[in-house]
Length: 97
Image (cartoon, rainbow, N blue to C red; front, side):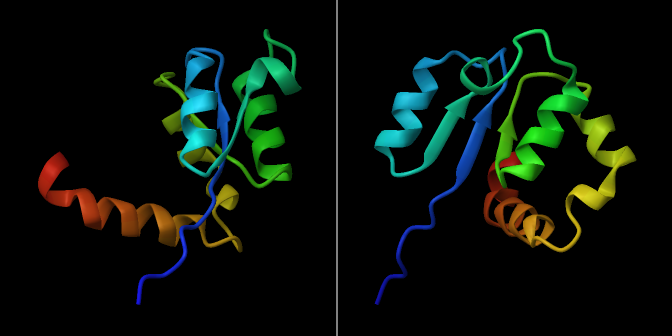
């Protein structure tokens, strides 16, 4: 028996083309582009705060998001996101390693 697909709530950063919204939504996820919910000139911290408050993961090309997450590990606390990230990395280990 296969388990039902989990819907992931995804917030696309400004540097991700909006065409990804339709692609991800068609795949059964709940994707939103930042330009539809926030100031297009917002700081990364504001984007992360919105994502956390609305239980979204952030897709971005920004290299500085990693340091933002590292400096604020409380983003992962209590919501199981860390476990999901580790599970995904384990599944993809052969491809990325």
